[in-house]
Amino acid sequence: MVDRPNKPTALATTPGLPPQPQVNTSHDNSRITAVLPTGESIEVLLYGATVISWKDRAGNEKLWVSEAAKLDGTKAVRGGIPLVFPVFGTAPDHAATSQLPQHGFARTSRWEFLGKSTSESGPADASVKLDFGLSSNTLDDEAKKLWPYTFSAIYSVTLTADSLGTGIVVTNDGDKPFECQVLMHTYLRIKDITQVQVTGLEDSEYVDKVDAAQVKTQSGAVTITGETDRVYTPAQGPAEPVVVSEAGEAVYSVVRDNLKDVVVWNPWTEKAAGIADFAPKDGFKNMICIEAGAVRGWTALEPGDALEGAQTISI
Image 1 (cartoon, rainbow, N blue to C red):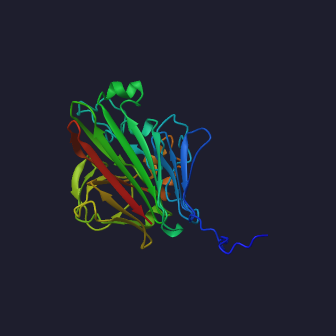
Image 2 (cartoon, one colour):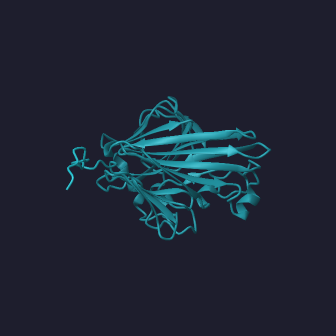
Image 3 (tube, one colour):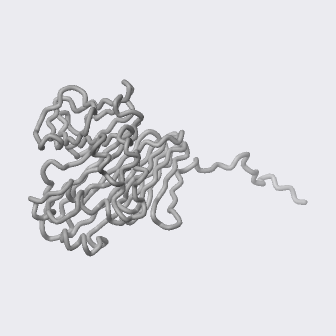
């Protein structure tokens, strides 16, 4: 046997990539799930690009979804994060959107999964971003007839160890301008609505939709003691956190980017009783909607213009 003085030696350990986020599509191609190496997870329905689950590493659910929610694509999901576009509520006096169903068609259209991007850092800093697309080309015929504008939208959902981010870019791809509204209708899960305070809205003007759409100014922290449906324009601007505290302890912090408004909603007893897909009927005790959007007035997009808006919810 010939002696080989320069014979290569095996490495003691073979270096490998750190654990990466796992992204999977369901067997029926209806939803996308992502799990970080540290255990945090999200689940997104392609119907509406609706985030229907966000869990921390211990498996605790952070979003509220009605037990009677339809997850089969037959109607908008009651809970999670439905995406509102191109109209908030209904707008009978706004010609372009007057025929659209409540909250528009984004939450009831099937979005295309465009792909994922993940961080290359260690497990503790891992993140995953899921991108979804909707355009005038992929809308169903009914929606095209009701809103005959040429557009494209990309919606991104980003999960980190301690936050969930959602962001949208809507581009006017046509040759005529259009006006739109956008909102992320986030249902946050809490333990006891009577123990909740919302701060960051002090001294802010709001439209009280439970009181004949009167314009009021918030004094102190927001507490929920009955049906609440308010559209705030926070005085401190989008970068100032809107914080949800429970029994004096901060549980969620919402920071917005280019979305000037925040809707605070809780149906309380009578309203919840009248909503067919709201269950259990006392579920209002365990949820509060903090909804980032641009819904007081309209955003006008000229041909080639884009509307960008995002939120980051930290725990």
